[in-house]
Amino acid sequence: MSEASPTEWKPDDYLRFEDLRLRPALDLLAQIPLENPTYITDLGCGPGNVTPFLRRRWPGADITGLDSSAAMLMRAKAEHQHLGVTWQQTDVRTWAAPVPQDLIYSNAVLHWIDDHAALFSRLMSVLRPGGVLAVQMPNQFNEPSHTLMREVARSGPWAETLTPLLRAAPVADTGAYYDWLQPLSTQLKIWETTYTQTLEGEDPVLDWISSTALKPLLEALDIDVRTAYRTALAGELRRAYPKRPDAKTLFPFRRLFIVAEALR
Image (cartoon, rainbow, N blue to C red; front, side):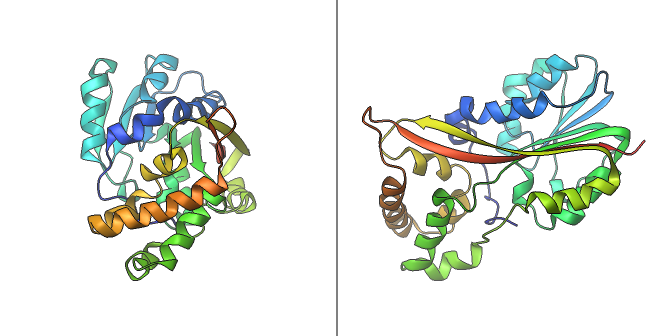
């Protein structure tokens, strides 16, 4: 349901905008109505930048940080080994919870995976009664940053390589998530927030998407073609997101939040 997932994540690139990426994660955490969960999975934990906040809120919980990227997990283990967290390399698409979960927390991960109707149903099925599925996903895919990425991908000498990788709608509309989750939930909250981010640099929007949505497209191209594609896209993004008089760039970024409490 998204552009193909990157072959390997680079923690330093992802963490370049750590503060801005952390805010929606903490906004999601603040809406979780659990007091003393026993089993928590940080599903798609990446470099572990949110896991310490889970540990701080629930110091007695059994927490597992799960990710498919060896590089991300290596960074998480190196920086957060003191947390008493179990780190596990597993693909979310094939993950099977060893015990019923009190909380499945997933920040900016599930948009990489297809078939959300089946995926969300499966995740709800491994919660204990009253357990919570808490999800945050970028919902930027119809905004200029992402529509231009796809338009430029289809319009140059790289089109034959990139066009098969493009998928326009990795996140469904809010009504679809409601229809899928409401029959499985005692309480269900779904909301969207647009974060107006103030970025610095020559091509800050390009830099932002290069470590996430754009990454699998860049990985598919040889270096010379990759450079040409990035240059063409950079020009379009500069026009869509012009610098302000103080040389900073405003980048509105939409995110979708879901907090579903399983039937008791």
